[in-house]
Length: 119
Length: 109
Image (cartoon, rainbow over all chains, first blue to last red; front, side, top):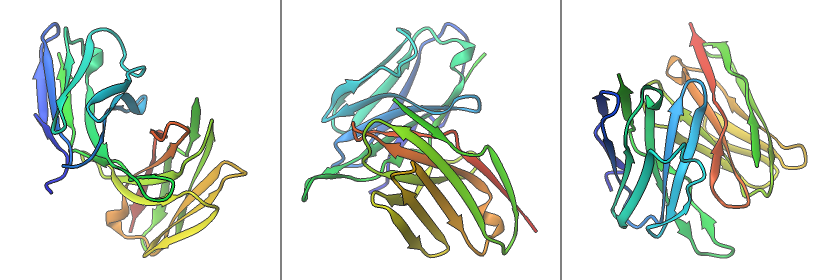
């Protein structure tokens, strides 16, 4: 498997514009996470999905952020309208809940991230 | 909620041993992870502890004490390429990992 694939790798946009980040998780993984990383706040969980269903979006900063997972192989994170304070690296990660004994979650595998700059 | 603390930055000499500590407070516990992240790259998995004790994997070892809410990552025979950020992540009752802010390790000759 090629791993978690994110696009674009870099995005520069003007304040007020809509930004869409894309993610393809590892095939067969049933959990998908969106994280945001900044120097000030580190790696923050924004939202996660289980079997394509959003489970917890309490980390989404505000209504300008939305995420979807229309199928098991694709997810998007959208910011509309974007603001300079949204500038960060956005990571997508996926993992698998493996049933065996008590059921064990594998570690999260990260994509290469999208570096977003809003000017 | 969860609270994870680790030092912001550490420096060490090539060939030496360094220990990076992580303390945590969590409601429910289902394991602790260490990740390595080189500048401009994605975090990559290093180790996982769910029971007390030491897990060894080559030059890297990770220790966990659940009663103390404490873990450390031990790096032996340091190499220049080990210069990176090391992230401690705790999986709580929800099985979802929460990350600390990371420790930036600088290895110098």
